[in-house]
Image (tube, rainbow, N blue to C red; front, side, top):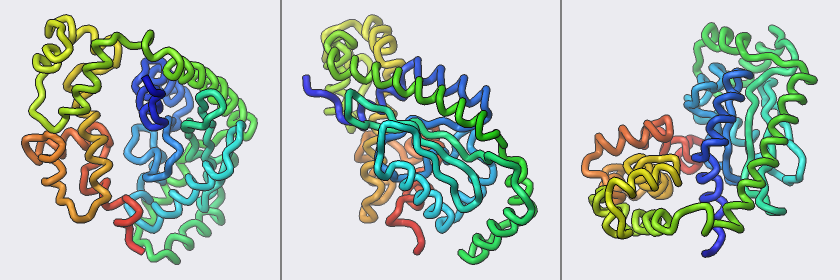
Length: 298
């Protein structure tokens, strides 16, 4: 079996119980967002997540500010090395990316931040708002100021300690990657592997749990338990993930209507597609498409 691609590895790691437990514990204890992301920069990493900085959330509604944030993310992943990399954005907030590797190969990043490493000042906020005004953004300054000065503040020492913990976790994930690369036949029952491939090949069809179980020669009851134990998702959740990932690959094409995409990937109604897409990504297909680079206003 060939090794899975970087994107597939990151998806597998993101669904793993160890990552989900760590992400929840990290965000609850620090109040900061955490995302396991691929090496590509396509969208704002923390957008619409539970622990997204309120100030950043306000700016994400404006394409010019989104472009500035994407530039910060690009700087984080440029000239990658073996050590964490931190960048300060135009508003004075720090973001950090911790590399995750499979052997010597970089496959993704653990990214956190949207935090001040010293108490912000009125002068600093004035410079930030002036930059936003120079970009032509129309914002509620009172709402923006409240969000700005309620941003989490950590001392550099506290932040460095937190990044050290993330680095250790990143190394642990690298070990998990090694297991996925080297021992795929032991990490997943053959029936589940065949089911994944069957779902991938037939995701546009009106698939049912019974049909997939039959295709891999197991009973529906046994397959249901086996699949959930191996993937961390039930059949319906997994199928939705596969279809949404397919949709994300089609949305950059401006010649495809969203309704066409919905039916092409197997949804029987546009309403259902919109609901599932938003539940998984945190935003509607329309919003997702508008935030893609080619759909952003110049």
